[in-house]
Image (cartoon, rainbow, N blue to C red; front, side, top):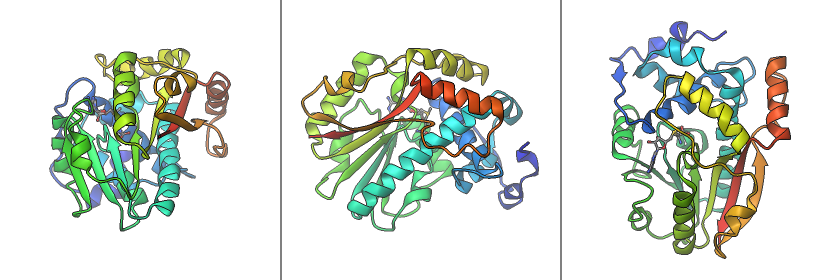
Length: 286
Ligand SMILES: C[S@@+](CC[C@H](N)C(=O)[O-])C[C@H]1O[C@@H](n2cnc3c(N)ncnc32)[C@H](O)[C@@H]1O
C-alpha cells in the first residue's frame, strides 16, 4: 500500500500546503493528479511522474478520502491515459522537434516535465481558477511554456497559439466527456476548420463506461461533476466534418503489461477492453 504521509518527497517539499478553491468541474483535476502520483509509487510503475507526487504533497486536500475512493483500476486508467498521450507526443516531437504542444484543460497536468525535448513550445490552457492554481504550484518554468487562462470555447486562444507551420499537437485529457455532445461537436468542427495540419488526441467514454466512472467521481466527493458525452465509434466524430480524419482509436488498456495489477484489476481491464469502455481518439485536421 502506498503511504503518501511517509514519502521522502514530503521532506523535500515542507512548504505551506495550498488550499484548493475550484469550480465543480475544475476540481476533477485532482483525480488524474493523484492517480499519476500513486502509479509512480507502485512497484513497477508504467508512468514515472515524480512531479505529480511533489505537487500532490503540496495540496491541502482530504488525501485519505481521495485515496480511499480511487480504485486500482481508476489509478491505472488515468495513469495509462497519460502514458498513451506521452507516447503520441514523443512521436510527434521526433517528427516536429520545433513544434507546439497545446494541453487543453491542463489542470495540474505534468506532461511537459515528462516529454519536453528542449525545443518545442508548450501551451497549457484552462479556466482562470485552474490556471491560477497551476501558476501558484507550477509556475511557467521557462519562456517556452505559456499558460492561457481561457475557456476552450473562447476561440481567441487560436490567435494566442499563433503560427503552427512547425506542427501543433493538441492533447485534451479528461475534459471532453464533461461536455454535452453539441458543445464537443461545435468545438471540434470549429478548430478543425481553423487549425488544418494539427493533430489532436483526447479520451472518450462509452455509455456503459460512463456509468462506472461517474460513480467513481461521485465517491471521490465530487458530487456536482457529471459526465455528459459518451461515444463508442470514432466515425461519429469524423462524420462531423470533412476536415477531421482519424489517425487511430486506441483502447486505454490495450498493450498494457499485466505484471503489477491485482487479479480483480486485470479482470476489470479485460472487461473495459471487451466493451470499449474507455478509448483515446487521435485525429488529424485536414
Ligand atoms: C479531469 S480534469 C483534467 C485535468 C488534466 N487534463 C489532467 O489530465 O491532469 C478537467 C479539467 O478541465 C478543465 N476545464 C473544464 N472546463 C473547461 C473549459 N471550458 N475550458 C478549458 N478547460 C476546462 C478543468 O478546469 C480541469 O482542469
